[in-house]
Image (cartoon, rainbow, N blue to C red):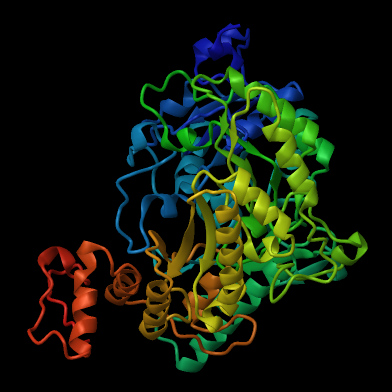
Length: 617
């Protein structure tokens, strides 16, 4: 069988090679087609294929060419749409709202093959191309925009993406089970009108009379959340309070074992989001990852795809995250319950890596969203099923959390002893506060699974900002550094940590940023991974940014929204870079050691309007 016929078809010719004259399901994605379980649409395609459905994929369609998505004809059951592995606006724009010149999920890194608001664009295209055919949206973009949300790029409140896309149904969370239920419904003769309330779905209803009151929560309406254009301070504060209450409700109702149906009124109708999907068992997860993925891009691509180059020799051990950081969507999307693969399944995948061109015995990453949560669960799972907290680690590890990382140590040792494996690296970020619970894990990773550099994410140094992030105190990171240095020295290795920090996070002003910079200098750190905070839809951090209040307490929070000062925060944290030399000049002037006025060059201006920078301000 040729490589093309092993892949899901993308053209009529490839359909013919399989002997198909019609598709059951067409999947459209904003990413390039890489037949790898890391990517959502190819994974769902393989899941559907296993159950006998004829599935085709159109990757990065030309949204300006109506004929592009019709090249395989009209599918029989439905069309599924995803913007891709990232929200398309985050993918296309920086934190300073400038167009990116690079898309990691596109051949050659080209930034021009994915539209803005890709879910909406692709769905409306499918509506026109296939009149009457059910269109279902999913993926991270649709999932996190299923309710009224603040859109950073429009700088305003937007209604649910269900309205703007005109999709028939939305899948939120991980959708392997959901997509099979939907496919079976349509195959059995069901319609959009009588589709059951499957877990992990949301749709627009005209009324909610059939939903029992004790099973639902009716949140604030779009109209209540949308602050009036010329409203009074009281009206704006009230709308902000309702937005924050909805944000907290969405977080609290994310546990699939005790959640309620969430309902949001909007313009005379209702967005009804059913309960989150239940986590997959180890066997279910094994079955998915053991599907016949080629782990290669479609051969139609000539240029390399940057994202693929990063993950092609990686192995995912688990999904989900119980960290619950306020700025992160992983827990909202994948759930807080860790779903882990069996050691046997992982070993089988490792043994198949030799079939990938270029394999030289190195596993570039053996991990999950957080590298060291493999096999970690609640000691008493009945307590977990009643819990409403998003994080099992903040403000400190839960008493009911089993933090023993010994099973992961045993798994890593097994993998690195597999014949043909020379190196096994852990490139996923490590929760250092969790690692501190099992120092032996730190030793194992430091001495055997670090390729000279280990990634960790302290995020900030200020206690108040870290609390808003739901991250541990910086002292926890300092303890981890001590362990890392000790074990590196014992192994006779010169290694370093690559810490990740966020600038301009809610609560962080220039004073706190300067103190963080002082922390860097005191610890001889020159961090290259500084990310300017991007308010992504539906996270609590975005609610903080929009309302300038703590969603849980309604207390005011300092928010840096001026682009010039956001730039200044990031540059302050990287004052060691040559292009940020004006930061050093400002500090010297304040100390009276830099007498002459320093004017930034055109390339160093902070407001984008070629105006000079006042180093005294």
